[in-house]
Image (cartoon, rainbow, N blue to C red):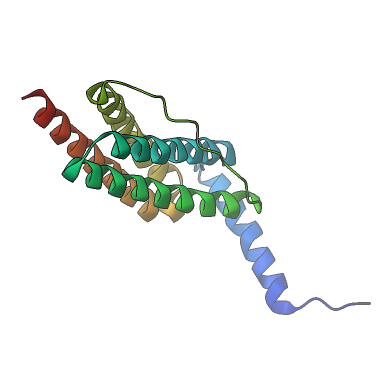
Length: 158
């Protein structure tokens, strides 16, 4: 008969008891399906900003490339969260960025997406306190992105 390592056994019981306490407190946790959906949104935003960076030039292009990299970092954070929830890694393909002749209209849609993502991450922080710092950080990034996009749109419309 194999003996169980006391440290491993203690870790298992801590997880079990921690899950029971969370359920008893009525805490709503983020689901793996939600995290997967957010991963897709971030990957799509990464592709969209890379595409728009190619359609613009100068400072706008550099800002959009930087925003694309930030979205990719968000994707990686969410992927780590997904792994924590499920124990599985997934492959998420970015949707092909829509070809557009009006960059201002694409930026307008991106602005709306950034505002929505900020709200979603702030709500997720309340639902999953263990990851609140990460969610609030991503929400702050999304807020910065929306402000940068608003500035780009203002410059284009003047």
